[in-house]
Image 1 (cartoon, one colour):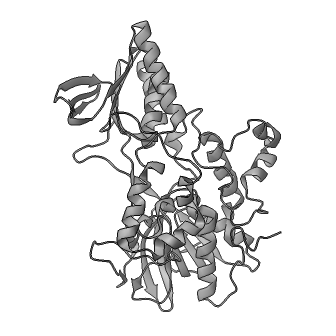
Image 2 (tube, helix red, strand yellow):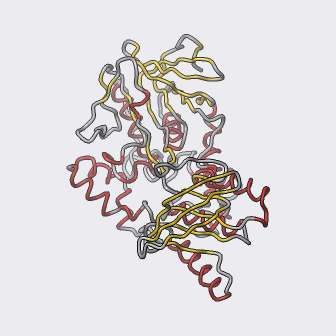
Image 3 (spheres, one colour):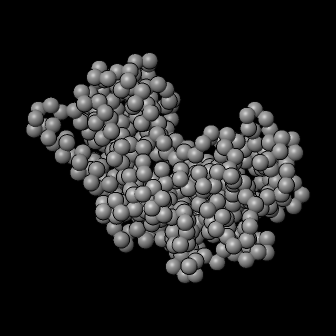
Length: 434
């Protein structure tokens, strides 16, 4: 625990945020042979991960073996298979013959792991600043209205992603980001029931397609209009060779590449993650749409190559104007709710730095983050690391779960190397713990 007013003992690591990234780091620290003093500060009151998108039946797009620990340490007790055994579902899961659990189950897995590490987390604690304090760093935060302070030899920032909205869009009771889809749908089902008439979903990616399917399922009498800037949903490329872009070794290749090559890699492989949809879901939506046309009761509508050009919300819904980029036709839709599935953006990790700490940036305003995920901070010798916000330096897997186990091990090794302690010694497909 931090001290009110004072800063308490010096910790080896303080982690800002306790999502999957720093949860994996906590696992790695727990499994290290030598004791480490770590503390993680999470502003939420309890552990949670994309709770608003826990759509019943929705599956993960990441292989379950790429969990919090297995690729770094196959014998870890924090692996997904051990979770299944602990929950009494191991054989049942294997009988499903799939690498992809539901999102609801994976959320339960993460919560299971977080509960085992509850003693190293301070929930309800929002960090406000990181400052130099001699040879270490002071982390200032607020908890229950009081200022608390911590001191650490290293800080790891992993605060996740923030919802992105088009310019001029403000969230409200009837204008949502898909981040809050499930609780908002549950509330509206209770309020409107069969009286719901129309919904609009903006976006072309997996979350948008899932939102369309979930609204269509939840309101069986309502129309659902999908608005996107493509001709139709594009399938995600999860073929074996394309998936190599998420390999741990691909981070080395990406980081040592020139900025021009990095940009080329990102552009050519965006269809592995951005504005793409699982092919099975595309097929399901198309079959539903076709069946409705056959029956003459069309509820699914797709506005291709289109955009929302006007939005006026009120307490009963929103008036939406959609313009086609193909023929310029304008459609005015009165919706019970509008869902913007328009993605997320990484926050600037340097926003926490104070007390004279500054960070180097390149000519584009980006932070050139080191291969070991260290920020180039001026004003202290104590290291500050970051998880996420590194796509421009470490590749497409930076904000995904694919490399979370390996990345956390690399950051822990960097912390240990800097303090002169032997690293974890656990590397993927090399020196495995047995």
